[in-house]
Amino acid sequence: MKILKHYLIRLSSFTAIAVMVVFSIQTIILNMINPTETATALSITSITPNIGSIDGGELVTITGDFGIPTDVPLNIVEISAGTNHTLALDSNGQIWAWGANGNGQLGNGTNTASSVPVEVDMTGVLYSRDIIQIVGGAPHTLALDSEGQIFAWGLNTSGQLGDGTNTNSNIPVAVDITGALAGRRVVQIAASHHASLALDSEGRVFSFGGNWSGQLGDDTNINSNIPVEVDMTGVLAGRRVVQIASGNEHYLALDSEGQIFAWGLNTSGQLGNGTFTNSSVPVEVDMTGVLAGRDIVQISTSTSHSLALDSEGRIFTWGNGGSGQLGNGTNTASSVPVEVDMTGVLAGRRVVQIAAGGDHTLALDSSGQIWTWGGNANGQLGDGTNTASNVPVEVDMTGVLAGRDIVQMTTGNSYSLALDSEGRVFAWGAGGAFGNGTNTGSNVPIAITNFGQGLIDSLDLSVTMGGSPCTNVRVVNPTTITCITPAHPAGVVDVTVRTLHGSVTLYQSYTFIDLPDVPNTGHERL
Image (cartoon, rainbow, N blue to C red):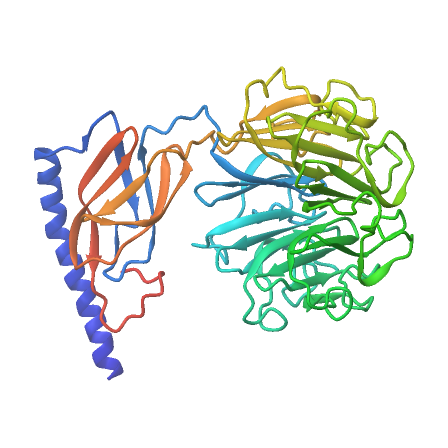
């Protein structure tokens, strides 16, 4: 049987070669009679590989001129900042990263820092994954796909990658889902300095990584390189958590009734429970003072301070206030929530989003204006000065942010970023994690336009082979796209690329062949 199988495979090989020779002659004649057609000056230069299984599912690379401009940024749909590195997710599903990379937190297979965005490796465990959330920790990164699977890369000395090892990785690895996460569908992730957090669809919370301050919330101080469940037997008993947030060594959780819980490091009062004592299990944030009767809709944390936003657009803070990051007109820490000063520039404003940085804070109002307060040594307040403020001030909106509809903000250790509704990214503060090609900071916002060759993905891009649509069509750069082949009967077919700029067809350019008795691994080639 083995000899017969080998003979059939060899016979298939010679048959395929003969078919390709015949069709190659036909292709030359057809392309002479019907040259590559295009509505504009588009062209297909190559298709690699140009032969594959009738079962489809194989990655092909198509090069040519598709009319993709090189002077506009990608349409970014989400941004996230770690301590000193930044992430962006584009609408093609590609993750970009830039900044520090000493532990592989950029995920591009190197440990070399980059002052411009580089592509995270999507060829391994992230291949064909639909990424829906990205988060940056201190020296590690997390990504969540639409199926609820978590992926991680970067520093792993405390087990914060959650893959069952303590080995760093400069490419994405899958977080272990055989233990506490078995059968769970994760819907939100968060990353801190040396640990990671996950929330599932049932409102239960899981953590992995460093635990010396009790930040895993499992009533121990033992690190774990696989996910463990946060203690749900105490104050969280019967609660359904709907949102999580990560600080340096502490975490926050918001339940469906608007109660906030916290655990981990508390040396600055960042747990908000009226003490400065660490806790290895969740405790209730004090809701008897300024938070009494408030409907909390968002939480955020950073190095050593915490934030909460209510449904009326009012902001509350607690923890370290040494740089004015509590925004209440003082530089004093508070172990219980205090209200941010709303009598100055925020008077009459309705805040809709908050973000906590290393020693500064951002707030976005309903009109798209950004406000900020706290430390400003690196220009992270973006108000054109390097002067700290313990009350809110306005981020400069007269330059690149003029007329922009801001939809998301994120903060690193000493820098800030904003994303507008057109998918453009802006940054200010300490340089290096900007993505603008330099290590020079700025105390006013600047535009980040260095995504690869400055691609645009709003192209209505599609690829068909023999009339059958390819899947996972992605722009690699202005002259290169990739896609996954469809299933198709054996034969030589036309390949057509369509964009908003027109369409182009390369006749008889891809061959589907039947490989009997050969498993379709995606790597078999004749």
